Picture 1 (cartoon, one colour):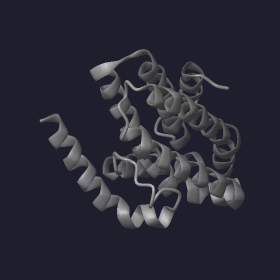
Picture 2 (spheres, rainbow, N blue to C red; picture 1 turned 120 degrees about the vertical axis):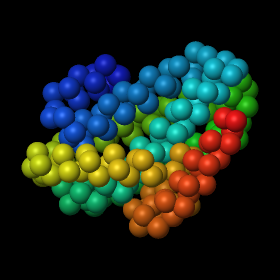
Picture 3 (cartoon, rainbow, N blue to C red; picture 1 turned 90 degrees about the vertical axis):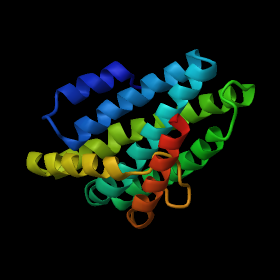
Picture 4 (cartoon, helix red, strand yellow; picture 1 turned 45 degrees about the vertical axis):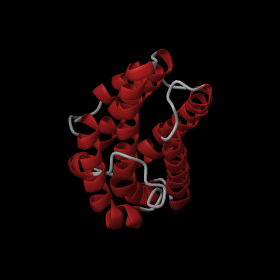
Length: 191
C-alpha cells in the first residue's frame, strides 16, 4: 500500500495542474490526516477529523463529477462504477463518524476500518483508474480536468451527503445547494 510521501513523489513527476497530480496530492493529505486523527484527542482530534471530513467530502464529489465520466471511457464503466460505489459507501460511514464523540472507543474502531477502506479505494484509483485516464487523455485535457476539478472543489459540499454520493448526476443536481448549506453550517460552528 502506498504512503503519503510516495503520493507526493508521484505527483511531483507530473505536469503542474494535471488532474492526477492534484488527486495524488490530496491522497497524501488524506493519509496524513488519518494519522493525525489517530494520534490526537479532544479538541485537536475533532478539528483534525473535521478537516479530514471536509477534504474527503470535497475530494470525492469532485472525483465523481470530473474524473469518473472520463474514467468510464478510459478505464471502463465497470471500473468507474466500482469507484463510485466505494465512494457512496464511504459517504455513509463518514456521516456516521461525524455524529460520534471523537474520543469514544467506537469512533476509534470505526475510523480504523474507515481508513483501511479509504486507502484501499485510493490504491484502486492510483493503480487502475489514474493510469487509464492519463493514457487516454492529452496533457492539455488533463490540465483542463485539473482546472475543472479545482473549480468544482470550491463549490462542493464539505459534509457527507449519502443520497448524492456515487452518482455524477446527483452530485451536479444537489451539490451546489448542499455546499451552500454546509459552508454556512461550517462558518456558524466556528463563531
